[in-house]
Length: 271
Image (cartoon, rainbow, N blue to C red; front, side, top):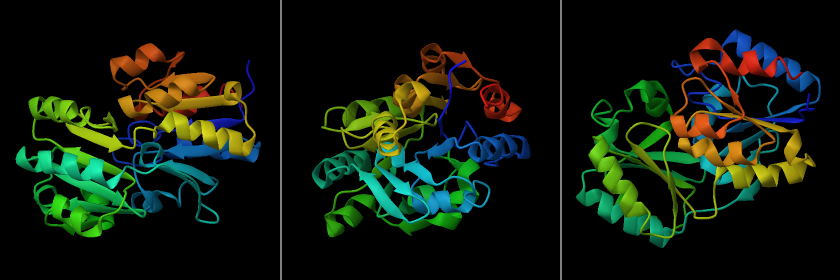
């Protein structure tokens, strides 16, 4: 059996259940791994303000990859050890097109999430109602993302685009791919936009080099398209039972779902 020195964990849909909770079973096995010297690295599409509410349950986690690889942070010192931002011009041009398609936007800037009022006030229509508590408590409400970014004129960590239906999501994804960006998704009706050089996989590679961990010593867990790059990088790739088919096909191991403590049930066999 391969020796695991680092575990890279997607959060929503992977190590967290549908209520956005870290169960006692998953926490117990993660604590056990950390106590044995294994690095536990959170790899999420969230930015810092959306990550903080969970950290009391991840008390043995020191490093996190945020905004799909937009940056990596040492949670003990708050130092960003890696950063790859989405250029202002690309983000602004995409926002102008999204505005004409009635697509709502969430911007991630300097560790803070800014959510458009249209989505904030009608989360059901934009299919984000299961994140209501998180978004309501961590996001700052803005009236218009395009105008907001134009006023700030700065590069950003990531952009989340929420669509009302699958057809608009497909069109929005095509729009994004006309620009020099990376576009992926983690929900049924969203598009997540990053720098063309940012991904969970690229950021994970940097973190592994930073921590002097070899690729073959990495185990990664994920469920969505934005996890694919880190699963392809890891020596041991694990797809959740609730993962999309493309992720399942790419993984070496298929775990039980996030509702069945799939992370704990696989990881316990490696520590």
